[in-house]
Each structure stands twice: as C-alpha cells, then as structure tokens.
Image 1 (cartoon, rainbow, N blue to C red):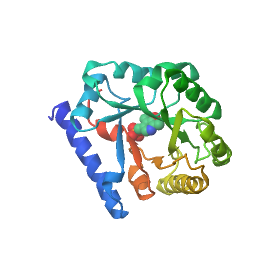
Image 2 (tube, helix red, strand yellow; image 1 turned 90 degrees about the vertical axis):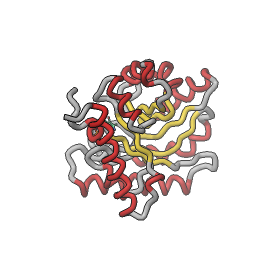
Image 3 (spheres, helix red, strand yellow; image 1 turned 45 degrees about the vertical axis):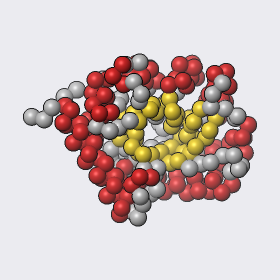
Length: 235
Ligand SMILES: *Cc1c(COP(=O)(O)O)cnc(C)c1O
C-alpha cells in the first residue's frame, strides 16, 4: 500500500505528464499551462501533500474553506485561487488571501470587488466566468454580457481582468466540452482584439479532471484539477 504522500506524488506526476502530452500533441509548450490543484476534497494535511508534490497553486470552491486552509500553518506560502462562487459579504475576507478569483459572474460582483480592493489599497486579479454551455444551473456571463462589459473594464481601477473562465456542460460528452472550450477561446480572442489597451485578456481557465486534455488542445492556460490528484486517497 502506498502512503498518502506517495499516492498524491504519483497522481500529481501522472497529471503533469498528461498535461505535457496533450500540450505536445497540440504543438504547445507545456510550460504555458498552469496547474491549479483543487484541494476542496481534502483537509489541510492532505492539501499539504499536494504542495510537497510541487503544486504551489491551490484552488478552493468555497470562500470559507479557502479561509480555513489559508490559515493552516502547513499551507503557509500557498498561492490561493478561488474557483467557486463568491458572495459579496465574503469579499473583504477573501481578497487579501487570493492571487486570482476565477469566478466573477456578474457586473455587480465585479464592482463590489473593485470597491473593496480600493478600500484595501490593492489590485485584485480576476477572471470573468462565462456560461458557454448554456446550462441554466450554471453561473456566469453570457458572451453578450461580457462583450457589453468590455468598454467598462478600464473604469475598475483596482481590478486586473486577466481573462475568462468556464466549465463545460455537466452532462455533455467530449465533443460538447471541446465546443464549449473552443467557444471560450474564440470569445477571448475576439475580446482581446477589441479590448481597451489597458485590458489584457491573456488567460483561459478551463479544464477539470474529466476534460483537461481537451482544454489543453483548445488553448487553455490554466487547468483546475481536483479528483485526479486525490484519486485512491481514503477521505
Ligand atoms: C471542483 C472544481 C474543479 C475540480 O474538479 P475535478 O473534476 O474534481 O477535477 C474545477 N473547477 C471548479 C469550479 C470546481 O468547483
């Protein structure tokens, strides 16, 4: 029986190999793709094994769980990513902890984050979450919503809007995921051409355990992988 440490190290190594193989197949440099290890399934102790295995960027879907783990001594120095829904009353506590918020899903939230960052005297790096699948249950802007917001972005002096994020349709197959990811990339390319000069939409956050290789083929720059990294772990 492998120890949890060995198990996680092997999972991380295999996931990195799969990312590299998918990148090479697509003629991309694997170094262009950032792995955010989603630690939401495990406690701080197991999350620290992800860090030991070389994952220095961790993602949490719930602000409270991010706060808890960010306070854990064994996770000091981690680069935190919020990948799930942020309620406005949780912005204040979350902002100082995170390096990127992937999940900004409304203009109202964007404005509230900007206000809070102004109060703190900082700049907050965010992605706009786009609902490419059209799933009614999913959060996120429509493509038209993001287009309409684009000219407003320079008004948010305390935000760096770095790109777009999406999740593929829950009940879709690989072809659906590919279409969702291609749609996000095309939208990013279109917006990047039209965006005000101070707005750099470089990042695409797309791809999870079930579909990250497809996302790499479709140009993702950030994958958010959870289950594949903790597979086999008793939890
Ligand atoms: C949980 C979660 C992930 C990771 O999903 P896995 O399928 O476990 O890799 C990625 N993105 C978001 C937004 C999540 O909530």
